[in-house]
Image 1 (cartoon, rainbow, N blue to C red):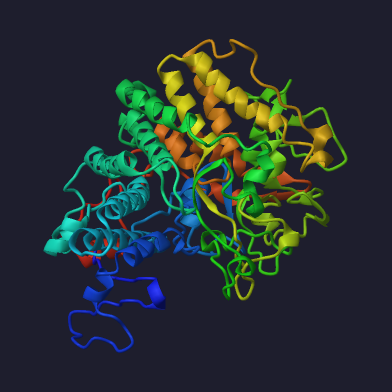
Image 2: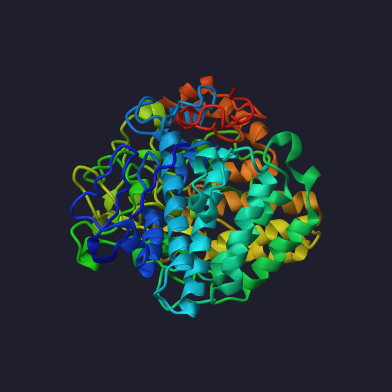
Length: 576
């Protein structure tokens, strides 16, 4: 990878732009590196600013890789050639150069790592802040670096580890991406989060900063991933469970459980901008509206800029479309999931026309559907006209990543954008990770309690926002003792995670962690290509989709990165 030295600082609106080797003249109107590096707080702010410094082609929330690559989501847009993400949803055409968006993601995430490394050097090598503040800020930056590396490792597997010492000795372009194993890379990420955990307070004076509970959540997530194996199906899944790592998950989620965070009372409120930073939000990328922060455009969520409903927003591009398989997964029978036969036939609710088929209420908070109010507002009814290409991607639309229509966009010309925070961790996510570990440790009653707490919250989430669907929904907690075996409990926890976290960029990574991606996705490709809504058929393009185990669990190292440093990087398995 050709790492470019990009040094930026937010203080006084000044920035640093490093020069290529053949340029010796410092540009006017800029500050030199030494001056910038001496401004420790500004360097830390610069690292924080990378959290939301993304774009639809390199979204740091990873929705194309976590949702589009799963059975939860279709790409959307004007057709299969709109953006380069088509290969992500069918896998069979995925190569080191297709989509080119992979290279953008790799590069921008390493820019974020570079900001963190520069901030650490500033904190370590320059004076300014008092010792206690330096210790605190160092822990925050270690958290941020762990966050960005977690994403790189999650998507690309074979990655070079570039830290502040690598920057000091200038060896970043001599650092191989196979120097460390997957386990060793995770150990380094864990070390960053552990340092943050040991130093950071449980609460921070300034909102949006990393704290001890966020670090505990990330440590639990890292150990949960490692507990199943190394990601490829041949060595991943319940047959490879590491109980010691599962115990680590429980220990770190103990800290979260005892913290100030909790379930928000209504599921729908979680995804309204006016409820951001609630007790449900452990750590989130902060977004703002220009009316709130008195800037020209605000701090918009550019990861989700394509994901507004067509014809509902001034620039709705209609990406991130829920699948029929996901909608079917919300079916209930006597208030419980229809595990074995949820996908036997295509069903969808119609407003004002209840049938014997009932639904988990979270469907109406997650999926926009024709005949229903869009994001709870009766004056904005979704119709079949609110889809750009129904013959390709159907009529469903995503609700979690947008505000209510009456609130308007943060930015609307020529692109729409919203002031919707990106959750890194919310409370129910972490509790479901805990439940997953508890099951594998044989503590089924505790896992059952967690799942029932979440289901009971869903049951209470009808009257406030989706009263129009009250006669369409039915959900109940599991009867006491239902989690009688690991197999039953495991299925219930995994199902709950799918429903609770649907369209939040986690589904593919969950399937990979459990070692079942090929089984689930290839069955999904076979059934989803037969989609029909009314008389409209769609998703036939999935006839070309195929997930290949021992290859498609991770994305290839982008061709451009291999080209920049020929002979230095090793390509991921299956892409040579």
